[in-house]
Image (cartoon, rainbow, N blue to C red; front, side, top):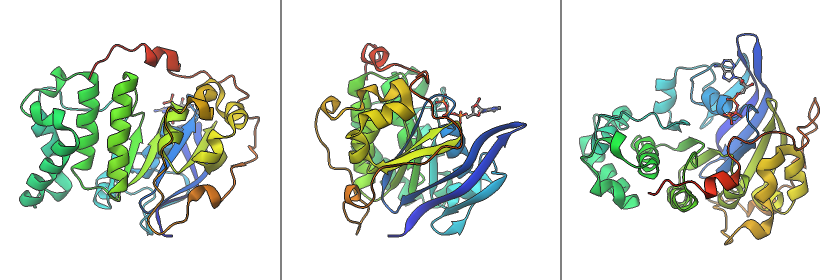
Amino acid sequence: MTNMLEVEGIDVFYGPIQALRGVTLHVGDGEMVALLGANGAGKTTTLRAISGLIAPEKGAIRIGGTEAGGIPAQKVVRMGVAHLPEGRELFGELSVIENLKLGHWPLRKDKKDEAALLDEIMDLFPRLRERAHQASATLSGGEQQMLAVSRALMSRPKLLLIDELSLGLAPIVVQQLFEAIAEVNRRGTAVLLVEQFVHVALKYSARAYALARGEVVLEGTSKELLASPQLLAAYLGESAEEAAPEAIAEEREPVAPAGAKAPAKKRPAKARAPRKKSPNGKAATKRPSTEVAEAETPV
Ligand code: ATP
């Protein structure tokens, strides 16, 4: 199996603060991988380093086998990477369709492709077709997230980086969004997914990594991690509490990369010995699941 993304031993600093310490991970072609961890663990920083928004001080990042560490974000987009940031970053006064067209800028010379892509995306999210000429600021939270996902898809990415898809959304909306991402993944786009809701992330991904204090402390297939709630709780704290298999309403076969064997059989879940103490269940979560269950954001 080839790898769409290889991150090898990266260190990232914000001034004197070291946010990542020797982070190593990979995403296979067409694979969906989750990146888990408590607040401040370094998940967003990892995505920012991959998409060229912050340069690692040490280590390597390869996209489709090509060195990409420290190169500017616009070039990383042209290498086939789309980054859906936490907080969506839509242009509120612009309409749905205008926001979508902005997402197509790396391929802007191909107007035919733009029309085809718009159609494809509106089929994935029919709600956006109905709202095509509405200002994006007037959309509901769920619709805005659909638009943010769709705008990222407008560059026809080979790798989609998603930061907190579920942020502030009701469970039913979160499920719709994850189903759409799963469909995009089935069509061949690799996905690296940062998510606070451990059970949702593990349900949809084939493999997962857990970060704590800037280090990868746990990795394995999602099935194995779901079957090890104690292990997850030890490394992820409260956010892992709902990760027990019975919490998964319906089993979904994770999408294995083309030509690969079922990932659950390939590599056992393994805890990487952290250099420092692991976050023994005390890490605070940004949004406890009860809060989301009560969220009132309709689609
Ligand atoms: P969260 O789930 O809360 O977003 P995270 O796992 O995504 O957390 P990061 O946002 O990557 O974590 O942050 C990793 C570390 O880097 C944290 O200690 C954070 O305080 C620090 N950090 C992040 N951004 C900056 C910044 N712009 N300047 C200084 N420190 C930062």
